[in-house]
Length: 174
Image (cartoon, rainbow, N blue to C red; front, side):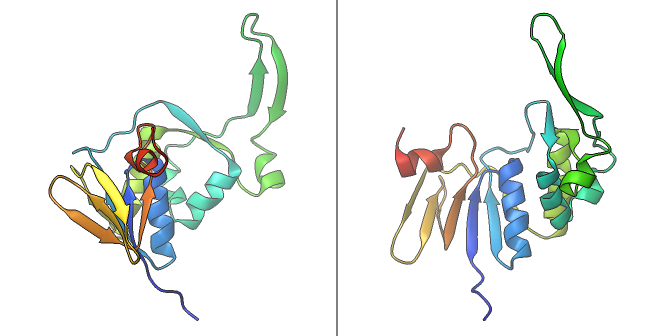
């Protein structure tokens, strides 16, 4: 039996919101992303993509877009903060695929977001920018998000809106 296609509001267009939207679209749902800013820019520096993360990104069709921007490190090193002495080391480059079934990569956050956005656009997933969420609530049949301009009903609301999450605040308080 085929499950019902859900209309899903995702609050936040960071890496988590974009990946959630791609995964939900792949499962036949209708995600729409609501982002409070006008332009999407990822803050921060480099991040590590573990083998498990890379398996998900491959499943979502993102890995091909990432190949030019990833770096596969030779090893992990744990270094003493004062002396710089290597305390422990583990090889990665040749063993990660053999042990975990996928490589271990490093990438800049902005490059990952750029690749995700390219696939989001290719999949026709809508991102509504300048849509700051002011409130959210539910009734027996729907979940609602409220912006300055309107109230938006959906079957599900997913909060991917970062450290100052309005979704988390509304669900569990400050």
